[in-house]
Image 1 (tube, rainbow over the protein chains, first blue to last red):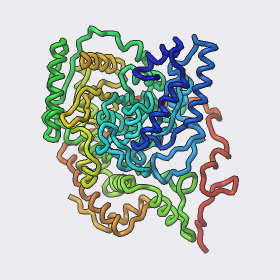
Image 2: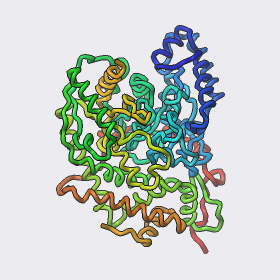
Image 3: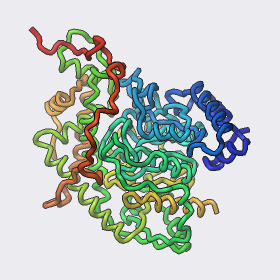
Image 4: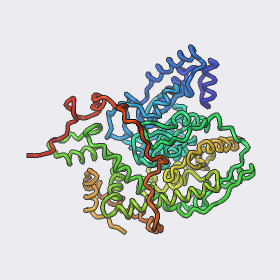
Amino acid sequence: MFSFSSIEEYLRDLLHGRTTCKEAVQYFLDNISSAQHLNAFLEVYGAEALQRAAELDQQRQENPNSIGKLHGVVIGLKDVIIYKNHKLSAASKVLEGYEAVYNATAVERLLAEGAIVIGRQNCDEFAMGSSNENSAFGKVLNAKDNTRVPGGSSGGSAVAVQAGLCMVSLGSDTGGSVRQPADFCGIVGLKPSYGRVSRYGLIAYASSFDQIGIFGHNVADAALVLEVVAGEDEFDSTVSNEPVGSYVSNIKSNSDKKYKIACFRQALEHPILDAEIKTSIFNTIEKLKSEGHEIEMVDFDYLDYIVPTYYILTTAEASSNLSRFDGVRYGHRTKEKNVDLSAFYKKSRSEGFGIEVQKRIMLGSFVLSAGYFDAYFTKAQKVRQLLKKATKEIFSQYDLLIMPTVTAPAFRFGEKSEDPIEMYLSDIYTVFANLVGIPAISLPLYQHSNGMPFGLQVLAPMFKEDEMLQFSDKVMEIKAL
Amino acid sequence: MIEITDQLVDNLAELSRLEFDATQKSVIKSDLQKIIQFMEKLNELDTEGVEPLLHISTRTNVLREDEVKGSITREEGLKNAPATDGQFFEVPKVIQK
């Protein structure tokens, strides 16, 4: 009987002939078919995954010494990351029937290392949402409690890992869309530094915020996938030329290192924060101190300004990025005849996009429009500059930063859909990393008295993924003790 | 604080190439009012003399040789288009008689 705990162990089992890629794929396909009610996958590539598994099994038998880093690793892709000759919809009606004509760079790299893509995963439409209630193809359920949201926008990708429907998933994180659902589902969610992973082939929401992120059961699995997908790409000139570390093999290095860690006082004392989350994080701080790490409360006066800044800048970028959906080159086209070009665009777009997406396009048009541009858009860019400076200042004195990932554990369906501000404010701890471009990870450390899991967020300076992962691995070990 | 009027919503819809029925419009209008009011919190911050942050990427002037590569074929480019004549995308007539 197949079971999965880590990629390292799986690869060892494969090489010792204790299991096969085919057995692994079959195991996940069986799990997917008995978990259909969760609505995590929009499409499952069953036959194709089995065939690729058989080919990989054959290759390994012939040449066991030259297998890829992700040989036979069963991966799911959020429905915003393109995979050649497969459908892609961004969970929107506007892209119904669309079939990718090239591979995202991240996908290309996964495949080159032997990964098996098992399907594409449900999400909030165009990655806009914090609860996965905005998908045109229905909500995703949290596997731990089906009355609660899985988080968003990469809800399907998180639930797929949570419920054992694949080994790891790729999602996208513009303001927390990997870390928040990872927190709600009790798994690891990693957002790399801006420019660490190519965005080529990722459907753009807000281009100066978007990063492909990784869901896994443990820190090492996420580190391994990051190592494979990260690095320069001739198709995305915003990708950094900083060398990609050996994230996995270095994960146990510097194990004696004592870290100097900052914690925002305003974050832990914020009235919006759930009392149990606050207590749990304070307990962890004490535990870390007793292990010899230095943790200090620092003042961060900008906390209440980060969510408004985030929504001004991301909606502006979204309104520009989503202008490409015009019903001409791809995507939904209105059936109405005898309309002029302007009406043709309006009908095609309004029939295709869901209401949250249209709302954000409208907001973006507002902050960019004549008369409001300076007061909103430029103002937010200035605040982003202040945030970046403040962050640099903090990291000149500290190695890492810790924070809650969320304000409260997974809420119930419909609970926050009435008030947009309440929904947006629940991103308060995650959008910070995207605003300043730094890497962050959510670690599944805790359980709430309501039965739901929640996590601790660890943030590091730009391109210090290695230190962040080393510390994270250590924190997970402390938890296990 | 700015007041979101029907006229402003109509203007933004025009700029966004979107259209709404009366029910949707009232939802959009009330949400815009709430969200824009929320965004105005930034006015509390003094940003006098601060340069706006225009790029988050750490790279500048990423150049490469001007080689023709990495494109898709015409067939692939047209594959997902709702209407083509086999060579071009088709749109409604732009200039009316």
